[in-house]
Length: 281
Image (tube, helix red, strand yellow):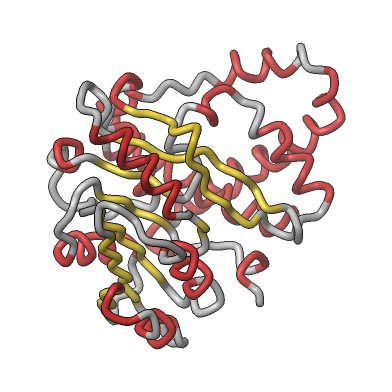
């Protein structure tokens, strides 16, 4: 049985679309879905319950993604176990491909689909950023900004509870060496891009801050990270078609680094930032 854990904080605009796609056809093995509504003050739980017994809804007053992931783990029973954001679209066929990859045995303990961006609401500046970002080699190696990651039973035994970190996906990623992670090319997660550069900078700031936090708390794990920014950027210089987009990529990264460093200095007052533009109905 494949288990899917979906932490959801005020996701009334997205949870129905997410669950409808997951349940759009029969899947073998059986699918278990656990939606953990954390600190919601909207209709997220009500909408999730409309999908019947195939969806388990857990509610908590604590507005914490990590807390929701741990509650979801307590409720889930099956493996492989997939953790996904509520604003991501993943099909039963994609789930089968991910499960097949993890059930082969061998060294692969963690897997993720490839990312497909929905740019229907995005400005041309946001498109320019992602044109560069998606060309970087490390974004194609799995578990990089795709909103979904999956673990085999052996992979899940690699750690206990999710620690209280911003970047849960980053933490899980660096628990595994590159040969233990797999990008499943035959599976895709569809993610809605932010509408504006300001919205994009918010989520990239959170990602950067999460990376700084991991470096402080788990420096020993960073040896498993295979991101080499300098090498990647030098590779872009050999792709003239990307040159007009590079300034936007550099600007977003510069702003995200600056904002993340400021937030790190006042971390006790940090407020989770997310993109609301892609969640509007």
